[in-house]
Length: 393
Image (cartoon, rainbow, N blue to C red; front, side, top):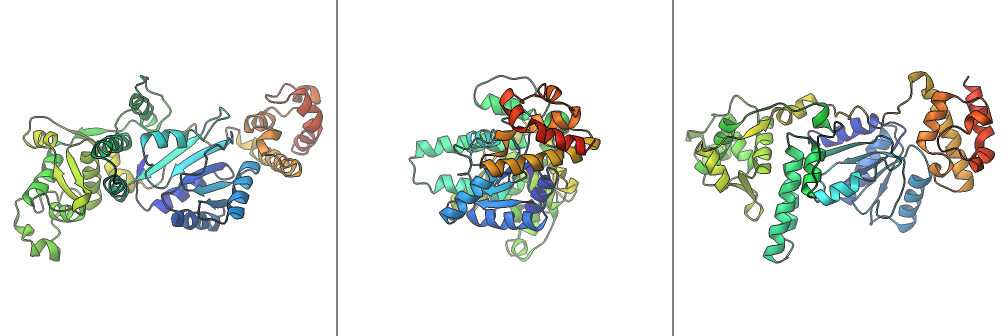
């Protein structure tokens, strides 16, 4: 999970790290699916949009192409994937914050169903948070239901900003206990935390001294000492908190607001144009009754730029010398799948092709020992794939 910083570029880098592999990118709006798909196509990827507003014939054709072909990226709204079982999806990305922890769990679960490593990336920002909160507050649901939805939303933000293993946090949400997974970004590159009590106190002081009436950007201007016309008109350039946060830039302060929100210290009031208020727990931190740890890497995420994979992700786990053969085997699989009008994985799974590329069998008997090559498939496809392997000898 990464804080948004030029999200289209972050998605481009994520997909580029999985060139030629099957993936799904989820977006919050129909318009965004089409725009992002177009940008991925321009970058040389085979990308297709999918949303309910598409012509039904186009929508079904795009879905069939994804199911049957290799190296297809579907850029879709959250409706995509229900009832679809494509085992060789190597990556799932979220260009926008998922709707809930439950939705996130379900959507990332569409990758790696063949048992091979898969990769995920989820982007989030304050605009996402405001949008989700507005959906809750404007839903017309009973207050008790809204309270539950707020709690679910807070759990999702906590998952984004957590300093510990994401799998632990994710399973804990479903009342399951787990040790560190060793595979998520936080296990592989454990985030450095620091005592953020002073930063929290500065942010909450700015909120309270402006009457709990303003949103993020105005408060950030005050903290960094940016005397905008609005800041001067309100007299906020005369506040004791004006410029008190000059040691950090605006991007870092936005991240601090996100983390404080995720920790439940401040509250985003959507009904009042996104103003921040301080919670009872936040007031405890403000008084010095307790401390709050913040993640340093989240503050620095956008400065680092490039998205990371988990190191065991969808990059093809074959040696460089075998990569060309693997590509040729995938091309053969794709052509056979189109001829028989079946998904590519029905011919052979990714794992099977990877073993072929690495072990390079030179007889039907050796081919029969490759994972996923039963007697029927051996008789049907064995010699054809052996011929390709021999050509790359």
